[in-house]
Image (cartoon, rainbow, N blue to C red; front, side, top):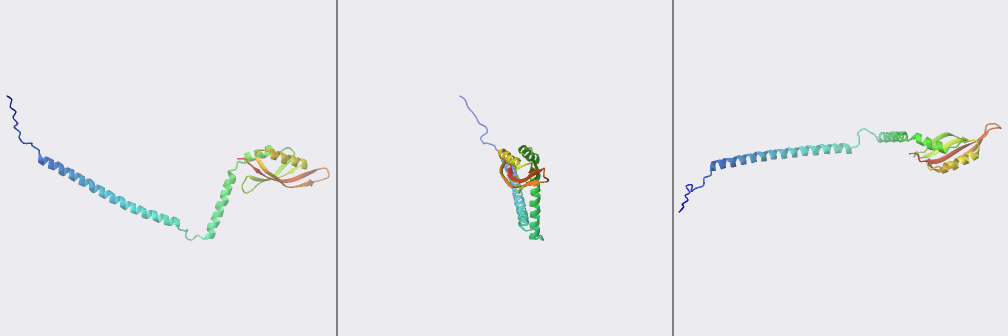
Length: 179
């Protein structure tokens, strides 16, 4: 026969130690909760300060500049447009344009003036030729060019310097694709 005897009839728990651990855990959680409350209130204060600053900047942007008249604003806008046109004209590839016109200009034609229109693709070509037949050949060569379109002979007149020499002065309008 076998007897089993249990001398520990009661379970022993250290209630003091468990209470201390519980109090420490509650204290740590209260400190963390307090820190989170302080952080949230600080963030809300910062948010309201930033909202006020944004509203102040938006009101400054929305307001018209003080002491500046309408004529001064219009004059400044005209200057800006003028300088933007200069920048656009400086960005033009002039060498490519001159190459296109040179390849389309035959012998016997001399161009004396190249004048751009507002959109820089339309040009007015002024020049001289030995005869009107040379001007006709020049117009045909311009029409055959793939980079030149909308060719129009605006004017021409016969020039006579003396009895032996004569020539034709002409003005042509065309659109040049060179970019």
